[in-house]
Image: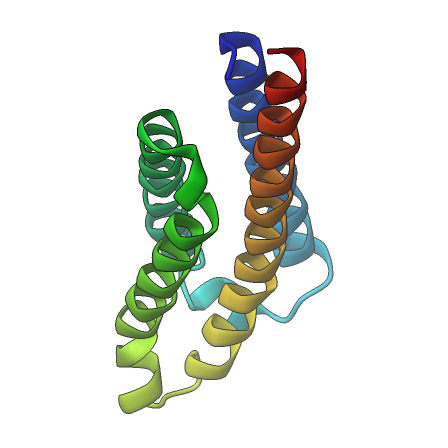
Length: 136
């Protein structure tokens, strides 16, 4: 795996999170009811950005050591992320108030596009690996 590939992927994630956050902010200020802002959606980004960054770092490190177990590594990371997400959302599941439903809806509106981008990252990483193998 070359460094330009990794740099491009990191840049894509940064740009993606910026676009999602700006779009989310614009929707909160212009279209959605005020209860959605009261749910403190910034907590979603405080949770998702570090766990995504750590997960991608873990995937890349495992890929560099053993590129044959890539899918297993990604599945492990995805399961850990889903369990961590349930733990993160636990207070809104248990202590239901007016902000519970808006927070959960906003969380999954951000979570699933991030999961899609992570999956695309895995596909690109695997296709990059097969191209490097064919060159050898």
